[in-house]
Structure formats: structure tokens, C-alpha cells
Amino acid sequence: MKRLYTFIILSCNLLIHNINAQDSLFCRNVICNLSSPQMHGRGCAYEGDSIAADFIKQKCIEIGLKSLTNDFYQHYSYPAYAMEGECNITVNNQTMVAGKEYLICNFSSPIAQNNIPILYTDIKTVAIPDSLNKFIDKHKSIIPKCIIYVQNADNPTKVEEKCLRSFKKINPFGSIGIIVGQKTLPMASVSNYPEDYNSALIYVIDTLFDSKPTKISVSFSNQLVDHNTQNVCAFIEGSEVKDSFMVFTAHYDHVGRMGKDVYFPGAHDNASGVAAVLDIAKYFQQNKPKYSVAFLFFSGEEAGIIGSSIFVENPLIPLDRIKLVVNLDMFCGGDEGIMVVNSQDKHTKVFYDNMVAINNERHYVSDIKSRPNAANSDHYPFSEHCPAIFIYTMGGKYGGYHNIYDSCDKCGLENYENIISLIVNAVAR
Ligand SMILES: [Zn+2]
Image 1: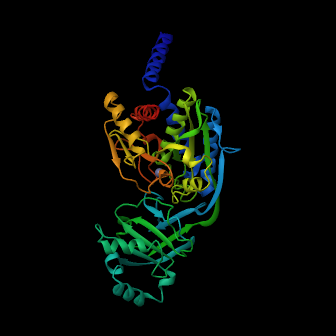
Image 2: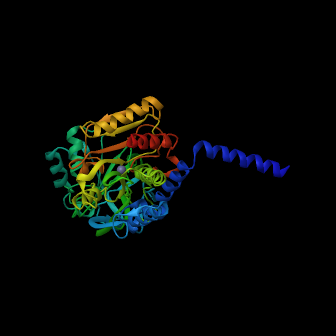
Image 3: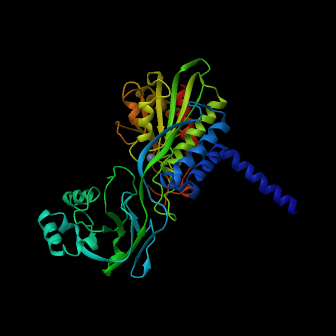
């Protein structure tokens, strides 16, 4: 009886596997590995991006891809902040929850001080130069020892928004730091930071400060380093036209850590795109292409599309031999179809029209939308030299965007194989 029971369960499992095929399992495995705590959010902290690069390189070797360099890596470096070690904020004797209740901007100078006095103001006051100066004048003797709490408005005006943005360049108060209180936390980011901020900028959920606590204890480390990183560059040689390339790209970096206990998983952005490109590589390894196909995995995207820019400045394949770059970034979900960025120039339109025609026949996705070119992912540096598009999914399940909730378990892959099939078929046509 027991044996029969086991047999039934096994058969059911096999059926489910057959329906889902193994590729979305492969994809899930890659996404879960890349967004695990061991990868530290794939940023500068604890060399998380290099740990991810090694994982991707091993996958390339397993699949049987060739290297475009002697070790699959294109090495480079850029200045970046590494927020490692302890990270603690205590207010009203309560330790706040990092990532959920507060977000320290990545360029903040370290603080290690208990019971820092808090001075309260609001965005209405500090957005007007005159009243800002009055506030500074009134408190000038104590400001250098304080943290300034600025209550944001629920619907800030353009002027107030501009003022908030200016806090990311300079602290106008000269205080230890600025705390911005608002309803929800902004997304974590590592781009466009000042390299000599000399203060701390911290966002908090404002309800935690309803009682206007007078002191706050803050402790975190942060360091600007010359961050060594690398693009991972692989290819499959074409069976007929070896010196012409189709290129698939995805960035594997994300925004790293906020101290040793909290990391940003980046499953949707962009472990999912990396998994998709590896999956496409598997397909072409089994179905040898006429043209050569390159698979490029970039770092430094979140810091300002650095990895792909480095590749374009130092191309490992001639840019004028690239037929098309297909960049995949944010590939969970897709219940509402896909968006194709830069799909309407005279070269990329052919591919886009192919995709639409194939989709009309086979109904892989519910919609294929089109957007003009934008400098919003790794296709962009290529687009000035060769045909390049960027595909992302629309709708469906993913955990979050540039926050602690973008985890592997929240990444919906129900449409994944259909989207991959659509892309592969459009390339083949
Ligand atoms: Zn991304």
C-alpha cells in the first residue's frame, strides 16, 4: 500500500515536470542562487558581484560556452561605496528594522554615536531658501551635533521634490545627518552619488517619529573603495557565419547591502534576466546557430550602466559585426506581456515585427508593447553603434523593485518559457 502511494506521488511529480519542462526549474535555480544572502545583493559589499560572476562563469562552463577572454572575465573597476559590518538605528529604545523601517543612502558617511539630538522641521520650511536660512540661523550653535529630521509632504510640490533631491548632493544644514520621514521608503540606489558627501542621508517611515523622540542612536560603517569587478563574456561559434554575432545581454549586479544583516536580493532586477540569457545559451548550445551568438553578463549597471559602457569602449567582438543586441532586464512576471525598448529604428523594427507576427500565430504572450530608446539599461551604450533593444516583462508577480522584498520566492515564472520561446523563434526567423 505504501509503495503504491509513493508511486502515485512520483507519477504526479513527473507530470508536473513535463508540463513545466525543466527550463523554468533551471531558471528558478539560477534566480534563487543569485538572490541568496551568499551573493550579498551582488553589489560592492563583500565583493558580492564577484561571487555572482563566478557562479555565472561556472554556468557558462557547464553549458559548454566558449570564453571571449582567457577567463570569461573582462576586468575593470569603478569607485563605489561598501556598506559592511554593523548597522543599527535605535529610537525610543526600539531598534528599527533596516530596509523595512529605514534606508540609509549608499553615499552616507559612517556614524557611530548614541543619543544624537534630533531637530525637527518639514519640507515646506526647508524648500524655501529664506525660511531654511532662518531655521539654520536659529539653531546654528547646536546643528553640527544634531541630526535634522525633515518631514516630507504626502504630495510634495515640484519645488519640495527638488529640495529633497538636493539633499542627495549636499547637506545644507551642516548637521551630522538628515533624516527624511515619509509614508514609504524610496527605492535603494547606488547611482549618481557624490563622492565626498560628508554627512548621512537616511529615509524613515514617518509614523515611527510621531511621538517626536528627542534622541536617536545611529551606528553603521561605509567606505568608498576602488571596486574591482568584471563583465562575464561567453559565446557560441556560428556553424556558417562565424564573424557575425547575435548578442544577448543581462546585468547581474544589484544594489548590494545595508550592513551585514540586510541585503537587497534583486531577483526580478536582474537575476531573472541572467537566468533567461543562460537559458537561451542552453537552447543555442543544443540547436547550433548559423551566426555566432554572444552572451554578455554585465556588472555596474545599477551604478550607471558602467559594465556595458566599458564593453562598448573595449569591445571583445567588433561592434559593426553585431546583427542585434537583445538586453533582458527584469524578467519575472509578464502576465501582461512584454515591453520592447528601442524597437522602432530601421534595424530593430525587423526583429520587433517578427516577434509580433510569431506571437499573432502562436500566442506566446498577451501583449507586445513598444517604447522609444532610453538610457535605462545595458542596451543603451550599444544602441549608438549597432541595433540594440531592451525587453522587460509587464505585470505579473515579483516581490519589489530595489528593496528587500525582491526575493526569488516572489518571482513569477508562469510566462517565462513562452517569452523565451518567442524571443528564440524571432531570432531564428
Ligand atoms: Zn536592472
